[in-house]
Length: 396
Image 1 (cartoon, helix red, strand yellow):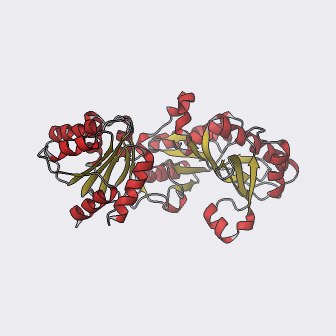
Image 2 (cartoon, one colour):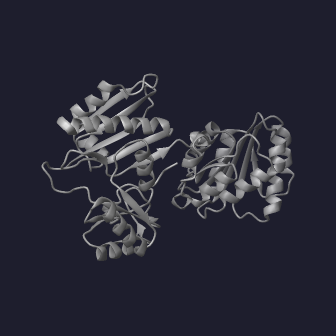
Image 3 (cartoon, rainbow, N blue to C red):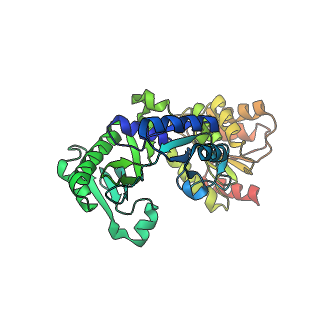
C-alpha cells in the first residue's frame, strides 16, 4: 500500500526523522490558510506547493512549484488541484490531483551551501537482508545515476537479526562526505529512518532528496513510502491511510470481492485458480498470439457466485475479446466449477465475448460433459495446447 508524501512524512516524524514541515490542503483557500499557519509555526517566507499523487516525477509534470507570496500560493494551488498530472510514472491520462501539500522553504541561506542526497531502505531479495541504498546524487532519478555514475551509489546490508549497527550509520555519513554536526545529524537520521522502516512493516522507504541545510540539519524533503499489505492487520492506523482514489478502480472492486486481480493491457481475460497457474496461463495466451488483459486468481473456492463476480470484473474492460477460464481441480471439484460457470453465464444473460473453459483434475470429464451439454456458447478444453488452439481460433 502506497502513502502520499504528507502521510509518509508524518510517519517518519513519529519515529524521530526530521522532515520538511507542511500542511495538506484540498482547496486554494485551504492552501492560503495552511501557508499562513506554516509561516507562524516555522517562520518560512516562501512555500513549496506539491501535488499529492501516488507517482514520482511530479516536478517534471508541473506538480511541484515555489510560491513567494500568498497570492502565488492561491494561484498555484488553484492550478494544481483538479489537474490531471502527467509524469514519467503515470499513464498518458495522468492522475487527478485532489490535494496539495503546502511545505516550508528549507533552502534558506546560511554558512554552508545546501546539499542533496538520495536514500532508500528496502529488502535485498538476493540475500534476505534489509538494505540502505544511498548516493551523493540526490534530486536525480536513481535509475539515471545507476546508469551513468554507478560508482556513486552505495549500499549498506543489514542483518535483520542484529539490526542497524552504529558503525554502519556512521559509514553512511562518511561515504556521503559529511563531517562535524552534519555527520552526527546524518547518523541519527539513518538510525531513525531504519527504525521507522522496520517498525511500520514497510517494503520501501525512499527519500529523494535528503537535504543537508545551510546550517547542517539533515531532513527528508520528500518521502515515498510503500507498506507491506500483508502486515497491515498489525497497523490499523496505517491501513486507514489508504487512498482508493489513487488506485485502479477495477482492482479496488476486485479486492473487495476477495479476488486477486491485476489490470493489464491485453485482449484476453483470464480467470484462474492459483497464482502459479495464472502466470502459466498468461504465457499460454501470449503463445497463442493474444495478450493477457489481466491477472485474476479466484482462489480455491470457485463457486457460482465467485465465478460470476470474476466475470463481471473481467467484462468491465472493453478491450477484452475473449475469456479463458483455466481451473485445476485439486481442492475444488471441476464439475462444481463447471456448474458455477453455467449458472453465472445464465444469471448474467448474454455475454458477447467467446469463453474457453479448461478444467483439469478431479471430475474433469464430468465437467467437460456439463459444459458441452449446457447449450451455451462456451468452448471446453482439457489440455493446455487445446485451450491455446481455441484461444487462437476465436481471436483470428
